[in-house]
Each structure stands twice: as C-alpha cells, then as structure tokens.
Image (cartoon, rainbow, N blue to C red):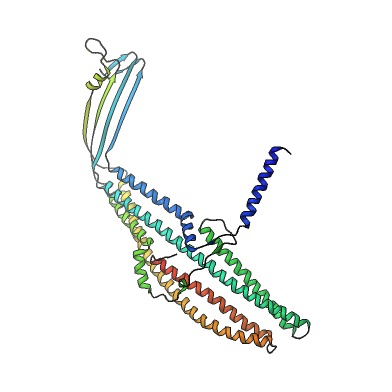
Length: 448
C-alpha cells in the first residue's frame, strides 16, 4: 500500500475512534447557572444585541464629531511640461516647471437651529435604548432558559413516574399470565392488564419525546449541539415553595421601573422628540465661520536679477491667510426640510403609540400571568389531597385484586386514578414554578 494511502487510512481510523469516544462520553450534568451563562455567551440574539449597542456607540461618536470644527489640509507637488501657469507671476510659461502649494484651513458651524445639538441628544437616547434593549434580550433569554430547564426537570420527573407505573403493571401482567395459564382467573383480567401495560408504554414514549424536545430547546438556547443524554441538576426545595404574596398591581408598578422593555420604549420616544427638533432646525438659517492659510512655490519664479528665487523664500513671500463668515438661508429645497419634519413628527407619534402599547400589553400580561399562577396554586393544593386519597384507594384495590376479591376493572380504575393524579401533581408543581418565574421576570428579580 502506498504511504499516502496508509496515512489517510490511519487518519480515518483515528477520526472514527475519536468520534465514537466522544459519543460514548456521557454528557455533563449542567446547573441552571451554567445553562444561563452559556446561553448569554453563545446565543445569537444576545450577540446581535451587543452589536446593535456597539453600532449605537459609533453613531453617538459620529454625532459628537459633527459638532467639532472641520479642519483639513493639502500638499500638492506638480511637474509641468510645456505651456503652464507660473504660480509666482500668474503668467504663462513654456518650459519645464515644478510647483508646490500648501493649504491648511477649517470651518465651524456657529448656529443651525440647534440641529446638531438635538441630533447629538437623539443619539445619546438611542445608545441608552440600545443598552436597555440588550438587557431586555438578556433578561428574555434568561427567562427562556429557566423555562426550558424546568421543562427538562418536569418531563424527567414524569418519566420516572411512568417508568414506575410500567414496572408495577409489568409485574401484574407476569402474575396474571401465570394465573391465566392455570385457568385461575378470567382471561379478560389478563388481557385488560396487557392493554393497560401497552397504554402506559405509549405514555412513557410520549413523555420521553417531550423530554427530548425540552433538551433540544435548552440546547438551542445555549447554541450547543443537541445530546439525548443531556442532564440537568435538580433545583433546591425552596425553588418550589408555594405562596406568592405580591399582587398584580404591585408587580405592574415594579415592571414599569425595572423592565428593560419599558425603558427602551421610553428612550426611543425621547430620541424621537429630539429627532423632530433636529429636523425643525433645517428650517433655520445656518451661520458659520471659516479660515485658512495658503502658500505656494514655482520653479520658474525669478527675481529682478533673473535669478531663481529660493524655495523657502517663496513660501514666505507667497504666504496668505483668509477668514470668512457665511450665512445660508434655506429658501427652496424641494420641500425636503418640511418633509423631513413631517416624517419626524409621524415617527414621534409612532413611538408614543408603541410606548403606550407596551404599557397596556404589560399590564394585561401581568394580570393574566398572575391569574394563571393563582389558578395553578389552587389546582396544586387540590391535587395534593387527591393524590393522598387515591393512594389509599389504590392500596386497598391492589390488596383486593391480588387476593382475587375483585376484577381487573376495579383495579385498573383505581390505578389510573392514582397515576393520573400523580402526573397532574408533577405538572402543576412545575407549572407553578414557571408562573412565579415569569412574575419575577416582570419585576427584574430573576435568580438562578
């Protein structure tokens, strides 16, 4: 075999072994903090928000730069062949000639209807809005990660319950299969139990799919490759404490102060106010001053004795300065200035509408989520009592069924009641945790 093929085959074997080893390595168990911090670092929306903030910083620097004087300079060296103008005498010459000119000048706007000043203030508000929007993106991402994390835990707990249910039913099927072969029971009892086992296996598969969906959602939020064996750490008991005493009005008032979404809407409105004032400045005259320094050199320059004038002597002799004062009055520019004012006024009205709409939707969301939280809490409290009752009922039904004192129908009814109550209790427990995290998000109190 050729050496090149040997190296290629060795590389392929090494790559395959590395891939298999990576797949066989169990995924680490992630904490909630690790998930949030990874998402904040890797998530594309969070990275885009950072770029938007940086763009706003650049725009603000540009607005500040527009208020500074404009200074420019030029240096020009030229070689002429044939007929040209002698810069020293300003007359035509017909010979090879070298010239040089130097210029330094600048101008500064003194007044333009405060257009530049208002533009600067507008960009300052836009930068603050960019910072707030970045925080809003991070807060929303944090909430999404927490909810996905809780979904993984919720489906993991449900899977354990259903796994235990399948195990219990499997033992009953094994026991009834023996009794059915011996003719000690009605065949319907055995087949009812087999059907129950098949149904529980379907529920187990459905929950496993939901768990994998939650793992996929969490992985995507962290911008990490999906793994079916992704595990997350259990949350402490206090994370599921029942009882949320803050009312919807207090939550809404806190959200008006803490929620970055509200701050962003208000800052965009303030920026629009300054934009309108800046646009109105285009209707006023512009007043400015300017000045400059200029000198030049000509290789064809001669003195009265027909001798060439030295380079630095010419620069000194040709030195000149200028200063000017300018007033530009807008008379007719195709209604551009007035149309700009009209657009700025419409934009201001839109930001006012959006600011009001944010508050309306926020209040409605707080009221809805607080109501859902209370409903979930009430359901959880009832389910706790229901599970306790169904546990005792199932214990008695199981004893009677194993003793042959009842049929499979009574046993399965009691078992299904307990299984459904246990599953509903787990769902309600995690749903309550989700509802309270959403209310914390409104108040800027998300913890992980």
